[in-house]
Length: 390
Image: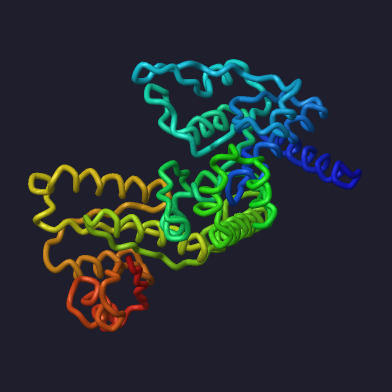
């Protein structure tokens, strides 16, 4: 390693150390990668070693090396909080032990695989929830996640890779991070590491190269990761310019977005995720998710499965930072939407249209979305309609 690289790492450790010392609430640093094998865990362990050299009490809460020799080598001399054992369906499974970390109270803890789903019986369902608890308790956390695990990107990742990523992290977790670092490799470098057996066992390599690790997939995932970090950095710069305070309402875009959903679970999820990203990109003052309940969707008439999907979608909206609006349709659904939009001073409505017809047919055929487009145009209000095709 060159002296220049050592200087950069030293400065990174010192910068994070200053953040740790600034306030009682713990700090959160996230290493974001485009895929497995880019070196997120390796970088976290390097930083842990650098912080220890500065006299910081750092422990490993959970690290997954996947047997990679260069990563395993970084574990030496780093103190580890023992994992706890949970029994599920007759199997003994190991998990991070947040309670033991809280009792140990280190200054900084390294927690790998932020998107991990905990074994049933754990206090929290997700590891990111464990991390939030540690940060609230005053313990700073260094963690890692791949871009495909971000909730609002789920639909885009599915289209790119064809894989339904089930373990996901709400975007709010990254937005609340004090520092997000993009661990980047070129597509060629990453595929070369895979072919050399540095990521997966040799027998898994051919399938990986022809599926998730196809060059075109990795290129698009890399673009998503770079864009995500750039957006987060832009928000951080705005916050720092405001004196380390959240962006004041008068400094934010005063637009208000309303996502209009129904009980169609897949469509609603895609509308919610796209509205979340649109709201973040526009830095709007507020965004809402509006569900207008039709008479046939009353609690005593709607099916249990449909009701469960609806509640899950509303929970998703909350996790992504949206505010929930539920109203019962007293008349035409479009009238209710326009009434709420006017009440909330919304100027952009986000609605879904099926992908089965041409765009002209989508707009000209009668339906709630089509009627809403006409109502917005005739209202005389400053309201635009954003169509999400699903």
